[in-house]
Image (tube, rainbow over all chains, first blue to last red; front, side, top):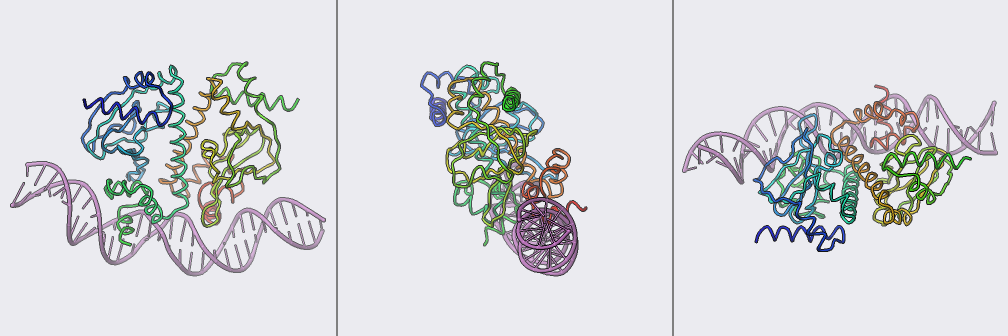
Length: 195
Length: 195
DNA sequence: AGACGATTTTGACCTATGTCAAAGGAAAAT
DNA sequence: ATTTTCCTTTGACATAGGTCAAAATCGTCT
């Protein structure tokens, strides 16, 4: 059955982060609720506390915020085959209102666990704590290398880097989204591509 | 005795992150070794694996890397009264060679724990795992807000922001270091200040 | 105190990228 | 199929901040 396949995929992904046994996995997955969303659905708005942690089974989700000039800045992109665990982490951690939005970019199927269940597992299951540690370590390293790219590379170099490291992003994302992920204007991206 | 004062301060800081009892604190602090360094000492070089986690008791330390054009980019600043726990986290986490340097900016006294002891505590003491989780959460949030500032604020706004939020950085850092922290050239910082 | 090196300031100029506006294309809605 | 809306490209121009060089100031060492 379909949900079974989602759950199995989730288990596989969870195991990449910590060495869960089957028993633990079964305890974990009961907390994950399945949902499906149409393209361009907002899952979290600025000002709302983020209380879900997501697994993307199918589709594409981005996390972005809106700057003072009204421009969108995309922070993080989750795909079914790439970085498929995550959330608006700052708000999820602090349980303060989010400055970030979460939005689907395609029709998307997810499994999501509530913040309270996530932290419940954190207290109950040692391996889950390790899992969360690994998630945080990965998130930190990812942010770190983003900063490095932002401060050392030109727009063109950042584009080339994504082209080389994550070409699937260029295939799947509109130029508008890709530009906001690279932190350049759409016009600039359009010009970069034609060089 | 002097080292006693350092240890007491460390204990106080540790307690901010997790609810250690005295017994736990005593077990922890035995792993922290005291060291003193002159101004402008390099504690970690690019290419070396970072295997220490630091507590700054006195002085000032920065974490930076050098970009392709040879310019230094300061990522993080640790002061005796501000952000006094940390290390070159990416390398410390992955145990891969660091791209970051760690350098003292003043005569500095620290307590440092080895990576192996850090992870030993992580396995042995539940509260230490919580401590590490909190450190990672804080580090993530810090990086996150750095990215936000880099992509939404002008050089002048970033300077004003530090002036408002962390004026002590402006007092204690040279313009050269401050500029590399703000990700602008020294000349630009000099011009910003005279406006 | 004097001198050397490092840091900071100032000036003239340059360039990558942003801005604004308009025209083309593509996709979605009717 | 046609309209409407959104997305992308192109053009002309503006500007924040970088670059390079030189002068001024500060700190440190003898």
